[in-house]
Length: 392
Ligand code: NZQ
Ligand code: ZN
Image (cartoon, rainbow, N blue to C red):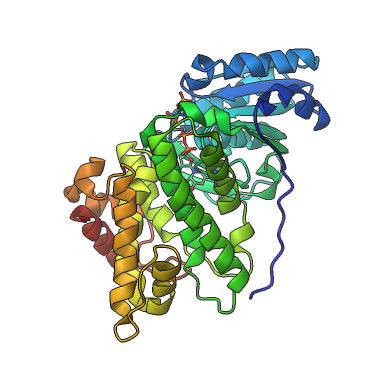
């Protein structure tokens, strides 16, 4: 196991109706003038925003509002949010929504405390200071409620880029599984796919003797394999929603990846798809991740066999381990398809002729990237090509 620091300072407030305590937690973490930041309408429609407004009022906290965050959140709204926070002297941002809303809130939080263009943080500059943020989560997916990361798309050129810093970690995150019961099956499945991908990015490692994190990863993956089909059939299943919601946090706050190298190429390769086609991140991952697995599995066949046997219940073929490894990947793709995810370019609405453009925007030139298997631009082209015709 490698040396590591593990820092996860967020207070997680989990369970039914906990969103009614939002005001109390904003006060606890020093907020007196809040920006409520939200998405395209689901939180208004469900009555969640009214509950949050009421809770803030009851705690004597004044607030401004900025809605309209789109999935794959845009820089244009971030600029508006920064201006609004400055004009209204906002000292705390409350994100009410999913990963897109939270990431947009993080970008605003960093931008308010910076004299230059906030996009600098998405082009390599480190965030040193940000307004405090809090979260009321409405979808189990991106894990932004527990991560220090934020992903924003620059409209000019549709560049999707990430930044990460501990100062962007939420002070508190309210996780009420009942809030996710209004999610359409497709969004639920996109979220489940993203959660599994966050684990796989860490599971495929070159670090040896990491039994504890291997087993934690497998626990999250097995939970997702069991619980996702239950909520697809029965969206109101609170217990299954609760397990998924906590799995989404555990998958991405860093816990399951400590002390081991990680990969993250599938995320980078996917981000170009969601930037170009504005598809859901989870749907893009369903197309890319099994294709990436098929491309890299020979690098460590036994690790793929471990996934196949422990997560997807495959029988180990000791004479032909490659058969087991490939069967595990096949079952992963089959699982994704069974929960309604696209698995190839056509099902996602992507086009083969865009591959050179996708690879160019990925932007590694003659370099290589990835912590498990280091990939060149040519390798990335090959992965997109596998994804074009993937089948179950
Ligand atoms: O905008 P509204 O109307 O709220 O609708 C949203 C949106 O259309 C809807 N939704 C959310 N909660 C709902 C609901 N609909 C009904 N009932 C509810 N309770 O779901 C749609 C998707 O929401 P979004 O926030 O985009 O989903 P997600 O949480 O998957 O976030 C995706 C974004 O996070 C980034 C992705 O790249 C993408 O931009 N990621 C962020 C990460 C991070 N910050 O750590 C890591 C991830 O790997 C990921 O890259
Ligand atoms: Zn993700």
